[in-house]
Image 1 (cartoon, one colour):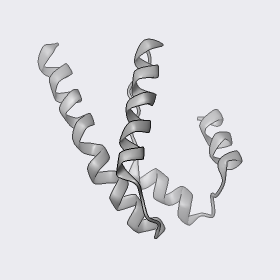
Image 2 (cartoon, helix red, strand yellow):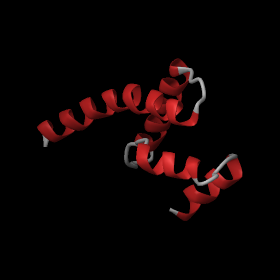
Image 3 (cartoon, rainbow, N blue to C red):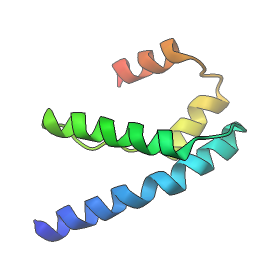
Length: 83
């Protein structure tokens, strides 16, 4: 169990600095990594306090959503609610 927890922790630490800039390049936007890391930390802490799973940016799903015309908070929240 401890090796699994350690590997998940290390994976969580490296996926944000890799996937967020890659997704920003795909969307052609600038990204504030400090803000992204802080938001990611808060969301994982809240999820942990509620006994939930860690969050993870799925690059392929996010880029598909962006390329298919998904924009704005309402459509994002609708997708989150449906999944």
